[in-house]
Length: 156
Image (cartoon, rainbow, N blue to C red; front, top):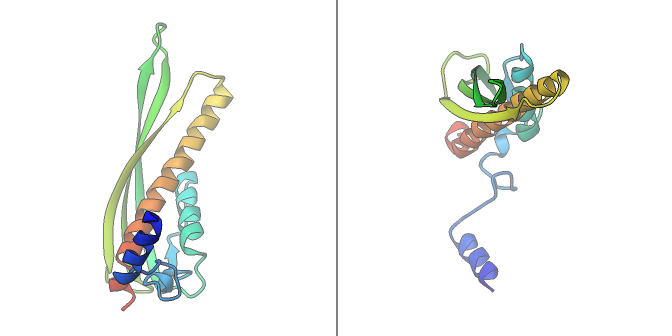
C-alpha cells in the first residue's frame, strides 16, 4: 500500500524518469564524445561513459578528462610484505559544445578501490587491473550522474 501511495505522490510532483519519453536527459543519449583514451584506465572510463550514455552518433558535446591515480600499500604481513593496496583516483573533466572551447560544465570526481596482493604474481597483477577497471567505472558513473543532474541546463 505504501508503494502505491509513493507512486501517486511522485506522479503528482512532476517526476519523470531521466530517460523517459519526456526525460530531460534524453538529448544526451549518443550526444557526448569523450576524448580518445590513451591508457587502459582511460579506455575503461570511456567504455563506461558510452555504456551509460550511448556511443556518440550525433555529437553535441565533447567530454575532456584527465585521470590521476595514487597507489598505496594498506596492509603489511609479519614478513613485511604488502598484502593489500589502495588506488585513489581523481578525474578532472570538462564538457563543451562540440567543436567549441567554451566550457558548459566542469567538475572533479574522486574515489578509491583496493585489491589483494596475497596470491601469485599473475593473480596480483590481474587484481590490480580489475581494481583499475572498477575505479574507472566508479569515476565514469559519477561523471554521468553530474551530467544527468545538469542535463536540463545543458540541453536548452
